[in-house]
Length: 407
Image (cartoon, rainbow, N blue to C red; front, side, top):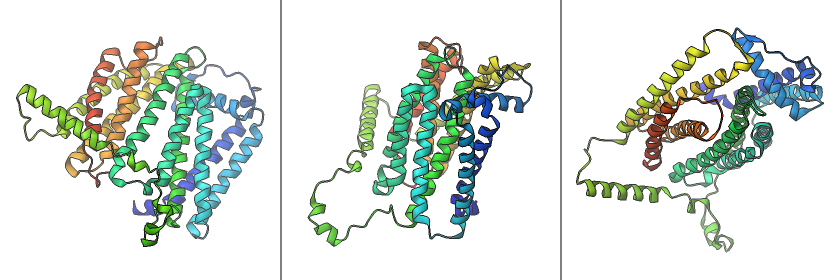
């Protein structure tokens, strides 16, 4: 584990190189289909995982064809050359720190370009709502670059702002997608582009991390210390807009929580038991969420594994993958809650996980109620129960005080 941390920037460079080489080879081997000159794909039978893999990436070809158009060979060769260049950069990072300044700007620029590419790909499915994700990307990127200039005591508020913009983008893009399912899009299109988008998003965040790490190692993004000269400077006496002035709103949230609890205890003339902690409620409700998600996943898994599927039945695969993600989020929530209770850490990760899980089940319920589609992750009673269970968990996470040491 220590070796991985020490070599993380080298490993990330290699992963980026592997991605671009594989992407280039994938484009070159499918130039005919990307140009639209290949044989029309039928509806092959899905017997094995490799059949599913090939069927899935047929849909990615459609998206790539819209982006690179009539130049797939050039795009494939450039992608391979760029991937090989990333291998060379990995060797350079391992060998010397002489070029860390230049490489920091390179990786930050690469991260932004990957964000733009992701937005361009998402535009094919989400339309103009893809710009909401670009806005969330930019805010996330700016936070990673300049987080040393922000007060660490307000780290919770920083994450809440980022999650708010990601949640806003997720809600509008998913509602837009479900409005077009079975009209211009299929479940496979949505699954393909979402997974491809996820890969690009993770890689772009990795590139951003390397850029920020290298820049801080050269003190390019370090917060300058204010000395006597800076204090006496006339220029420093001017009032400057600082984000921390607007990011300390947790105190207002805690005051609202305390006032509400006082009113409840006064109205009901009771006192809460001293042993009752928020973590106990989180574990109880989190376990119930896991049980309901597991039941639904097990039911859908049984349908998924019965018989053989053709491409026209890919909606089952779409539902199975999304239910698996919901199951993983429910397990991750219980994991972070347990360590939050026993060791006082993972506060922020717990908030991120429950926000993602709440968004998934809430958007699923919204789609079921207000969109005329036959594609749903949960049966309606389970979906309502999951929203009722995860909403208090989200509220507890928002109003719970975070310790500085609990990341």
